[in-house]
Length: 188
Image (cartoon, rainbow, N blue to C red):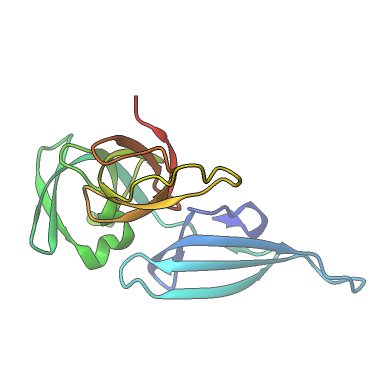
């Protein structure tokens, strides 16, 4: 059990017997006297992908989901399924692109990450905060356009597109933030 005021983004809650990942948390203090603190959360069901908005009072408690995290390695993609290997038991399992969602765009062969198990069943994988990806295609830089910081689109080896600075060219490796898909820096 966890108090409503202790809930953080990324927390896994057990609501109505299903695991929900908290995606947003907002704390609101009402102006009326005697009113209690309100905690508004948005969560995503890890089984179905459904979203939920819920308001809790500051003194309420919520059950946390009994989840286990294990180290896994991404092996390969097979049509619409992604195959992983559990690094502790060496068992292989597959997750669909629907289950992975946007995370599928950051997976490269050999990437090590963590799987999230709920009641012994793998629900999803947690990406590292940053990944290194190869720029496959990008527009040439505009010469002399330096009055403002400009960005240009670039397609990466996994198929996703991000905005990069104009000095980058195809064939370079970049670090990308997996939380919001932002370019961080050139990979060293």
